[in-house]
Amino acid sequence: MKITINYIAIILVVMIGLQSYAQQEPLYTQYYNNFNLINPAYSGSNGHLTATANIRSQWAGETGSPETQTFSIHGAMGKNVGLGLSVVHDEVFIWKNTSVFADFSYALELTETSTLSFGLKAGGSFLNVSLQDLGINDDPNLNENINQFNPNIGAGVLYYTNKFYASLSTVNLLETEHYDENSTVSTASDNMVFYLSVGYVVDLGEAFKLRPSILLRGVDGSPLSTDLSVTILWNNRLEFGLSHRFDESISGMFQVRVNNTIKVGYSYDSLTNNLGNYNNGSHEISLVFDFGSKGKHASKKRTPLFW
Image (tube, rainbow, N blue to C red):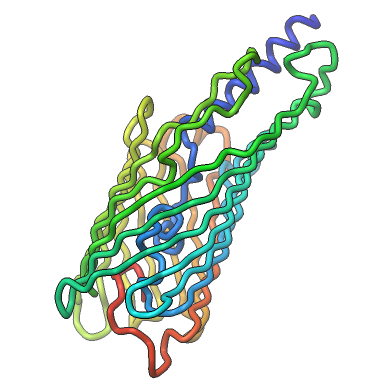
């Protein structure tokens, strides 16, 4: 029986490793509120200081299910330079990962209405796997916690007007091994994750705007992840819509701008694959603060990601 328990524990840890390998970077339905997390070139593109707090709870009702807490801040420093900082805490069962990254962007004005921005991201992740919480003390592979720091860098390019944007980026140029090579659970490693996103704004009269967008997420060894979103924006105050992550989930999204400074967003994901039979979906809440967005020095050249 002891052997069976040990093997079960090893399988659990390997599954956690596979989870980090397959997903690696946390998934966000409201990626438009955290776009500098996936592309550092977005930092400062609003023309003012923006801070965002995000909480995502996946597979609600399941013990040890994935949870992500995020805080990011970014802003324009002069005409061409943008800076940003992000902290992301991701947790699955006994696996915990906290990432801290700084962003730098440089924007080139191609025309009066179009901008091309380049960005760099640098920082790292603090990984903790609490193997001792499994309660198995007679297996040398499972009786010592794993703690390590993995440095990384990212890069991105963003083209935008006030109606259209196109983004290409990666957040982990350095491929890293999560576990010690001598361990029997050294199966998890991070490959580069690439993001490609395109969005557009269609005016529907004076009060309404249609905002379709697509996000492609690709990593070697995993299927391509595709998010297709369509939202309607009313008077730059209220936004609602749907998002579909192919072969995985359908999401309802809602955002409201309380005032010129505060915006609140909520989304609910309902799984369309077999996992949907075993959990209550995923919840995500965003709180966005825009400082100086309506002041006399506020920039009029913003990406369609912002409103």
